[in-house]
Every structure is written in C-alpha cells, then in structure tokens.
Image 1 (tube, one colour):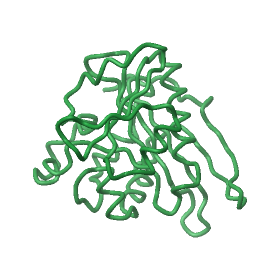
Image 2 (tube, one colour):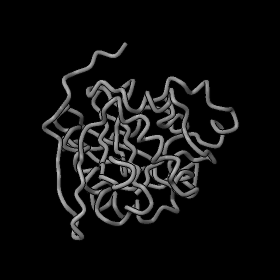
Image 3 (cartoon, rainbow, N blue to C red):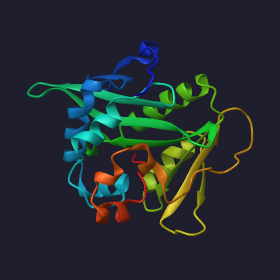
Image 4 (cartoon, one colour):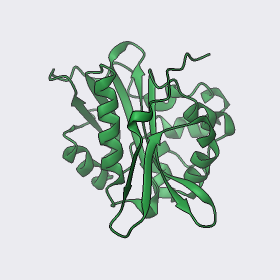
Amino acid sequence: MLEHTRYPTAFIDVWRLRDGTRLTLRPVLPQDAALLGNMVTRLSPTSRSNRFHGSIQGLPEVALNSMSCIDYARTMAFVITCEDEDRGEQVIADARYIVDARAADSAEFAVMVADRWQRRGLGRRAMQALTIAAQQAGLRWLHGDVRARNVPMLSLMRRCSFSCTPDQEDEDLVHAETSLGGLPWAGPVASRRQGLWRWLPWRSMVPSDVQAASGSFHVER
C-alpha cells in the first residue's frame, strides 16, 4: 500500500480563459478515476494513439484507479477541470510524473489535453505546475517521449525549455528532457521500450496486442 503524503493544496489554481470559462488546476484525487476515464473515451483516435501508442477505446477501472490514487511523492499528477452545465465537473487535461525506479532524482512525465481544449495554453500551464512540483520534490531531471509527428507538442516542449532529441533506434520518437537543478542531462535510466506503462501495476491485465502496440505513454499537447 502506498504511503500517501498530505494532499498538496498549495498547487490549486483557478483562472479564466479569454472567453470567461473558469478552469481549475489541482492535484488529482481518487474520485477523479471516472472523470479520467470519460476524458480518455472522448479523445479522438489520433490523440489516443499519441498518448497510448496503440488503438484503444478506453482504460479498465483498475488502470484509472492507479492513475487517480497516487502518493503525491513518488508520483505526482495534476488535472485541469471545467464545469459543464449538463455533466458537472469534467477533466480536460492531465499531467503527471513518476520518479524513476533506479534514479531518485529524475522522473518521466506525460501530458494529455482533450481535443477541443488544445491550443488554449492548458498544456503549458500543466507543464509549469508539474515542473514546479518536481523542483520542490528535489528532482533534477524530467524526461519523456513525444511522437515525432506531434509537432505542436514538440513546440510546447521547446517553449518549456525542454531539449528534444530524436531517438537513435526509433524514428517515430523524440526524447524531451530538461534539467531542473542546473546539471547536464544524464539520459533516461529506464528502458525506452518500457516507458510509462511501468507506472501501471495492471499491465498484465491489458491485452497483449495493445501492450505490443503501445510500448509507452506518449506526451499529448
């Protein structure tokens, strides 16, 4: 069982878009599992492919519970929400990191923004919060993989001061990484092929064809 730290309320942020829409950024809560599931289901096939590197329609309940029940220490996750008149609170963006198993000073991150909310600054806002949380946690590096065809995401990474380097073995992948402590990047410790699937203890419950197609979570703008 995870040893949870206190819910980090200091990260809660509320603001309005130019059209007056009120948005809230906050650390994820256990009760967000269903909201995360709804968001994944509503993603376009392209966005789901960019995020999960495979053709899936949604995530099983155990996976969503793993994403929403975190310890706020080894794993940190933020959601951005809005209020829908018909459906109530909705998750429209998710950003998270998990500390590398063999390097306590670095973490792998992932970002996802619902299709209709992309290009409205949510990805950058989420990444800024994630970077601050990582710095406060004493991490020195953040790293993640972006699909080479995801030009908007690569642009976001560069705006957030991440360096982007093509994978030498897989031309479809670009490694995004940044130093949080002024030290040079030492390279990801974990296997590139594992990626963020290792976050999820339910991996064995996912069909093998999806696992093979996925390989890792991929950052979405």
